[in-house]
Length: 192
Image (cartoon, rainbow, N blue to C red; front, side, top):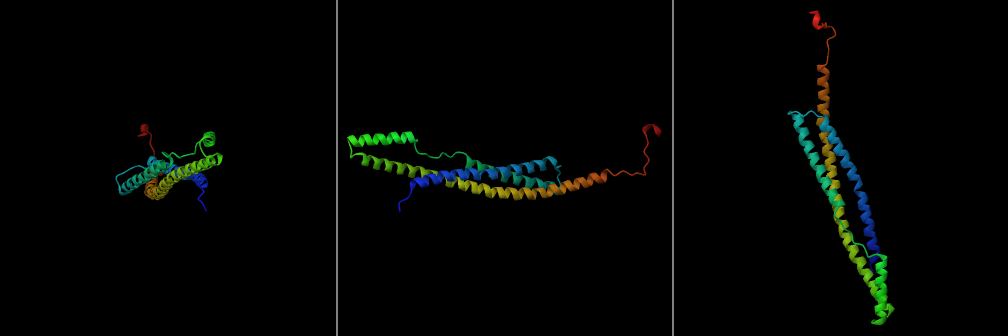
C-alpha cells in the first residue's frame, strides 16, 4: 500500500490548528495566576519576618515559573512558517505547460500527467515533512509550557499560604488595637 502524501500533508495542517487551539488554555491559566500574584503583592504588607521572607521567595519562584511558561508558549506560537503547495492556478498552468511540452518534445499527454503527478506527490511529501517537524517542535514546547504551568500553579498556591497567614494575623492585630474601653470617660479638650 503506497503512502498517501496528500493525506499526510492535510493531517499536518489539521494538527497545526489543533496545536494552535491547545495554547489558549495555558494563556488563560497564566493570566489567572499572574492576577492572583498581583493581588497578593498589592495586599501583602512586606516585613522582614519569617512569613515575609517565605512569601517573597515563593512569590519569586512563582513569577519565574510563570515567566518560563510564557517563554515556551511564545515559542510554540511564534516563529513557525508552514509550507503550502502552490496555488491552484499556478499548478494548473504548470500542468498545462508540461502537457504542451510533452506533446511537442516528449512522449505525449500521459507522460505529462505522470510527471505532474510525481511533482505533486513530491511537493506534498516535502511540505508534509516540513510541517510535521514544525508540529513536533511546537508540541514539545506546549508540553514544556504545560509542565511549567503546573509548577507555577503549585508554587502560587503555596505562596498563598503565607499570604493568608499574614492577612489573618494583620486582621487580628487591627482588631486588638481598635478595642475601646466603654467605661472610660471621654473629655473634650476644653473640659479639663
